Image 1 (cartoon, rainbow, N blue to C red):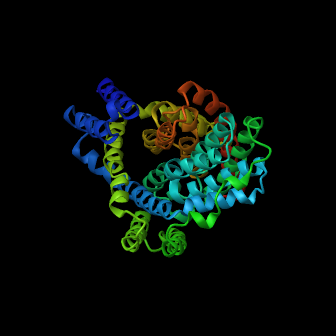
Image 2: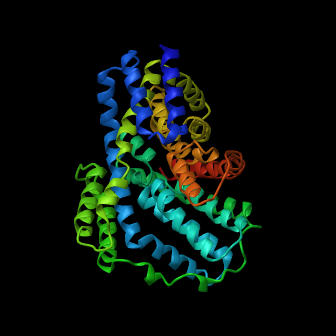
Length: 430
């Protein structure tokens, strides 16, 4: 049973990452789940339990992507990027910092996948319009891709990983944010430092902003642009009160998305049929299928290996537990993708002897490791795979070797600093 479940997992993950002949990620995930059922690795009861865990995360992600696609069509993100560029007053180093800060905000509110899909091509178009050389363009593109994951910690909705963990351990939106705001600040500061130091020779000292259009020229529908601010306000309020009114965040997000869709139907510049077609419906199938496969690995008791390592860390105290759990999650995420990793480790954490603050350290460090760790390799997260796909369509080629050499140098110090931020939160703030 162990070898069968492991074989199904490896083959499924390989096909998801490889996507031969453009095969959608949903098909191998469903195929792996069906094979797991047929071989007895999982049961229908397991499928039902997995569905109860991941449905909220999946539909929340789809709602956010629909909202972000509409806002992209309106010109909201291009307007934001143009404003950030003009705030730099032509200083290339400030512009580099502002691009990272914009990515931080977009990832926090629209998920890391939203940043990879939407902000990256906008940043790429702008730096190309500034007529920067290839080396300088790559610095800005790598920065926008890196920050997509490293700044996706602060809210439950900032990353699919966060939602899955929060649902699994029954963590409310406000409780989650209280634990992750400081680590996210550490992560953003760490990202700024490592990105600036790594690309310092590639960042232009001055840029000619006359090559860019005015921010107001990016807005394609003023009515929907104004409505988008109201939608964002409603979402933020809804997120924080969702726990008190016992409402899943996906209900709030999909409700806002539905209102936005209805308003956009009357717009002359928004093609709702194309937007709905581009929405990641396949993620629903992928999420359930992939997590069923992971549950099969759990049933084969392979999560016991991680559980034993975590129990060993508990004996060495809070700092060791926090950093150790985070790096275990990071390594596994970089090797087998962060979506299966966060569930795999969550199942292992459930079986440990950790209690109180040590258990909290494991839960949140697992999230941090699964959010940041994927940046080490190109296969670590769906956002990175989407990012590479977007760049490939824009004739920007980044080899896997080139990515790994950059990713490991940038990720390790940022991850360590972020985990220290979590330790400070748990040790001194609570």
